[in-house]
Image (tube, rainbow, N blue to C red; front, side, top):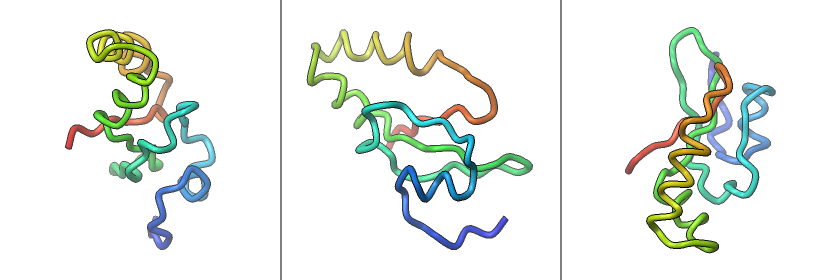
Length: 86
């Protein structure tokens, strides 16, 4: 697969993997796609940006706990997003 479109919007990622899973409310944390041999691209999120988005509604400690329990630990198959620590 040749990646021609280097945009990192949900729409552009779906061009390469229509089944790529997106997390509602976290589009601002998308940093790109994750490519792996033999797999379709999946969405790559900035871990810290995700925490910052959640912190709009709770403390950092609560946001970290929520994110780890409800997002990171939610494997939903080969199209599950990845989270990058920059």
